Length: 402
Ligand SMILES: *Cc1c(COP(=O)(O)O)cnc(C)c1O
Image 1 (cartoon, rainbow, N blue to C red):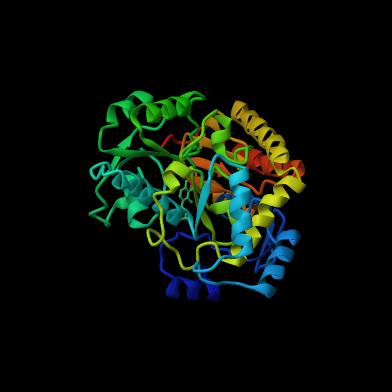
Image 2 (image 1 turned 60 degrees about the horizontal axis):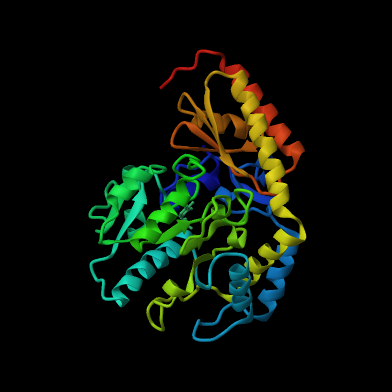
């Protein structure tokens, strides 16, 4: 691309992302506009972040109101928005206490540290291992990278941290065989997001919960992607008839403002006493005021109901495409965390969609992921399906199965 901004960016920004050559300038609802004046319907939503859409006027109002009062003070003091947000999260979940961080990885760091501290407080100093899942994703810091079950992401960063074991997702026997007297916690995404939009069997998490109860192991659910309504319930675990001991949130919690949270039951949360963990920015008035408004909008506007309606509709339409095109192997996901697995490498389809005015995302090479704002409309879904249909029709029947 010879756009001067893109050329400049490629010189000055760390090259950790293979970016698409558009410069996004503004957004409203589920639509984005680039600097060339082109318009896109957004089925990426900042990767499951902007659940209430872009430039949401209620959120702008809440943010400006707070910005005029107070942005930041240290966690040496109490603030109103942080307290209110923690109370609301607790009222809406299994948890008794919240620790605020600034990202998903940081929320998971807090969870891993809390699990260790819980057992070390009990004198069980060797009980620090965490069992995580193959193909999981938990973040890019050293501990969360170590907990991530995708070897390709660890290349070049050896040695990763000691203390993480891996078993296949959705395989209770493998998990049961791996739990030992040195296991502190089992760390799972209720639906694997980055790993390929993979749902577990409906009774898997119940069996995991039972295994944890029988062995005194903590259950940590990473709901950074599945939380905040993405799967059609406020938190993914609500689909599976269980409660975790610890849960992490981030992504959509602030609708795009950087905020993460680690929620825990009292018996384990109490291992975090004064001085045991901290974050300078964690839970600032500004981001917590925004997240508080996010949760209120969920109730005011029946976001979950809409997510379920639109999720079933999009899934049904994707199934229709699957019936029509042999090269679609599978339609998967829950709520508005949906994907289709192609029989071939599919990144070029992201480019094709972009040229037709739709942003979608490709993960694990062959899976197209759809995570639009939860306020997406039927009309916007129809236009995406129509676009995919045209692109698929143009591919013909004989796609190489590479
Ligand atoms: C995105 C994600 C993370 C990492 O969040 P960051 O804010 O990028 O650190 C961790 N776990 C899951 C399941 C995620 O989807």
